[in-house]
Amino acid sequence: MSPPRAPELMSSAALDDPHAIRVAGRELLSLALIDSRNLLLVLLALDESPVALRRAAQVGWYQEYWIARHLQRQRGEACDATGPRLAGLEPAIDEWLSPGSPPPAQALREYLAETLEVTLDLLGSSAEDDASLHFFRMSLLHEDRMGETFLQQLALGSMPARADRDALWMPAQRWSLGSPPGRGLVPVLERGAEAIQLPEFQIDAQPVNWARYVEFMADGGYDRAELWTAPGRQWLQAQGRRAPRTVEQWRGGVVVQRGTGALASLQRAAAGQPALHVNLHEAMAWCRWAGRRLPLEAEWELAAHRGGGRGFAWGDVFEWVAGPARLWEGQSSPPGWLPPGCLEVLPPPGSQAVLRGGSLATRKRWRHPKARRFAAAQRDDMCSGFRSCAW
Image 1 (cartoon, rainbow, N blue to C red):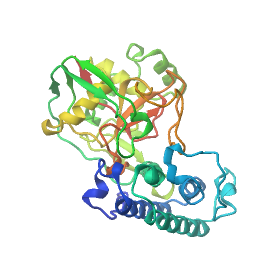
Image 2: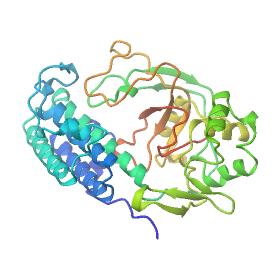
Image 3: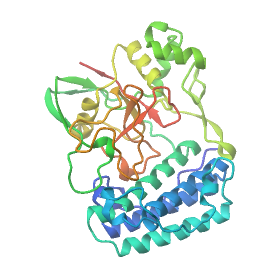
Image 4: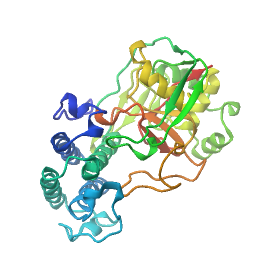
């Protein structure tokens, strides 16, 4: 039995536009918040585990905490994050969010309905400026991220299988990383600006697929210590891994474990689908085996902006890139400062790596070519893959 498809909900060009959503005004934000809540409720009906219930409760709590209860919400990031707040709608919300006491499903649905209604009422009377709309935009991003987590774990939908295409040559040029201050929502990890002079390089037109990854496994890739970095060898020894996280069989065709709970199933993955749930250690080992390397962030971003017309495909999986997780230079805020309501956590220097793009689980409105995520090298629970590069 094939897994259920991801629910098809309200869709429009504006709702899916990653540039429009960052500068969305009241009308578009209202539609997007309803759209996001509809998806969350559909996904919650498929998974009412304690973890899922707490995750959904966090959505209502975040929205209420930063909008309905927040006396300075109209100041946006300039607000006092520790200032006094109004009482919340649900007296048991702290208990619901604690590990031992998940919320009752029906009570949670009522709470989600109430918090959204209040949010939409306040949005309707909000001023149409960036500061006043900031926490409404952040609440949408937060809820869509939670929906992404649901979709990753339930494994709804199916990755597209793409025909092989020749790698792209990109000429030497100067590229500016990051997003300078401007109108709309600019996520923290994108802020700043760094100009980099890139020599010419070659980059895969699409992420490495299962057919190419199986060649690496068949050639003893997980047994050849010379292909792995020292941290990679330590991870490999500790995990005893012989294949990516969800792979149950790969000889004669890749069979992967999909979903959790009642939706769990084994499914054959098409050879042309991107290799999935691959961590950074595995991606780097494959690149060494193939005589290639991971792209630099600037190379990946340049190709995403300028290679679309030549077949550069992205957005099916998050993609590991070379280099440590760090903020861009030129941020106007103090080092280590995070704005109120920020969804990111800044890791210690050198402790994490970077993923670019988005995945099938990411709402289209957040698949922006400047988007970045930070994650530990061993993490493989995200819809992560990679592509390779060469000078």
